[in-house]
Length: 267
Image 1 (tube, one colour):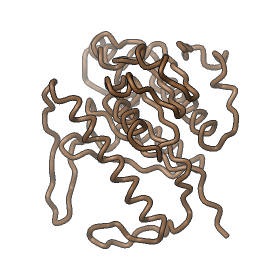
Image 2: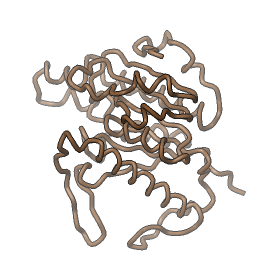
Image 3: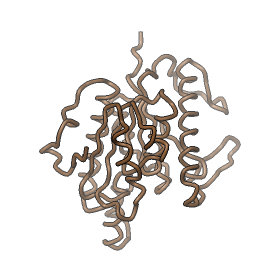
């Protein structure tokens, strides 16, 4: 008998860096620890999305006044993906082209599903948690939440890791102060010192190779060394999902760590 894997982690990517590789380093680390990870490319948000028949849709500019609609579309995408994963787990093939897929029949534990995202993806994560109780734990990386989530609150575990250089990205903490008293489940608000908004993406590791002025690079990625930033982000995201989905207590989330002094405990 195959024991179902403890969790499925769906992650939604940032519209700021709408690219197929923007959160791969975090996803790969979770997968290496036994989680099944599903990534979502949002049409007209990700760089390119290919449909059956070869049609390719590219990213489009999102007007500032449509940001809330973008969150709702991302949430609908995430819920659709959950539906298809559920079909896959029952032995069905949801692939529209009927391509052969890996055999996942009864191997996924869909009672324990986590989700995480960066920037707008963080907001979509919280929105999906509000709308769909199949998400049992969620994490937002340098992103805020919608007015709906802030008012209604969340009753499932929620963790935020904010950057330390968010002056140019006011939305990264939007509504978090309002939300916090309305959280009834486990919660943690952390801040990674020395990081800019893009330090939570794979582009962090490319930063030293970019032919951009040092001041611009610092504004985007911060001052924390890329290797160090990736290491810390992986440690805390993994600890969160192990604690909330595997139900194994992680002392790393209890208090500040001498091994990772860059991580500040806000709440």
